[in-house]
Amino acid sequence: MAYSVLEQMHDKLVSAEHPLLVADERLDGDSLGASLAMADYLLRLGKPVRVFISEPIPEKYKLLPHQDLCFFESSELSKISADVVVFFDCSDEKYAERVVQGLSGPRPLVLNIDHHITNPRYGHLHLVDHEAPATCEVVHRFFKENKITINKHIATCLFSGLIFDTTAFSNDATNAVAFSSASELMFAGARGGEAIRLLLKNRSVSALRLWGVALERLWFYEELQAVATCITLQDLEMFEIDEEEIGGLHNFLKGVIDHDTTCVMCEKSDGSVKISLRTDSGDVASIARARGGGGHAKAAGFSVPNSRLVCAADGCWRVENKL
Ligand SMILES: [Mn+2]
Image (cartoon, rainbow, N blue to C red):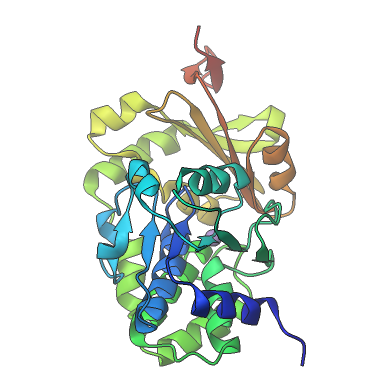
């Protein structure tokens, strides 16, 4: 039988002395779940594994194990020399390169496991399946193909990624594979109900009030043929919530609106405006890619640096460059 990429990746990890796992810069249930599932296995092999993430882990992921292996200070990277680095859910080659460059010692072997259509297939070995509902599903295949027992910790991590990326099997990423993978993970002991509650429900009153403001703002954005809304930094300040808490707004909107394409714009604390797009029938990845972003055909996004959101006289908002 052919020597598959997943088997090759497994061999590289088995012989690694200092593996480093890296979640996508945009930390979410999928990138974190995939990284921590792999961390569980490498711990089992007795490897001194570390997990690099871009920010502290939000409270809602408290169900996931091995958070003590995670670090987010990029200055820490220069104290580490890794021989194998695995990127999860990361289609941003520049980010991957920055992380690799930040390490000390000789250049490591780079493995790339992802499901974004915009992933440029960087790394020495890559498995990018844009039909996979989540990177966690690809990692699930990694375990099955290499005949590795999936314990309840791994199952909970992978299940979390699946429900995060499919919004609990309700968005366009949902396919038959998502259901079969989730079913197997539940049989393997995944804490499914808790994961769904923690990751997708449990909204604070302040967050929901802000969603209310965002829903009141809805307008038709001609240029993108999308129903759009936005959230400003002033909103976050007024409702005393952080950027992380607005994460579910777009899923909610897309789940209930009678229009094909939606757009949510958010001012970020780094001075940029982040624009995220969802569609049922079009291809928003190409729109995002043309503007320096990335994602999937049906869910993608990009950022406009050094800009802010301004409400025009007609009630429609627009992105304006800061002077
Ligand atoms: Mn993903």
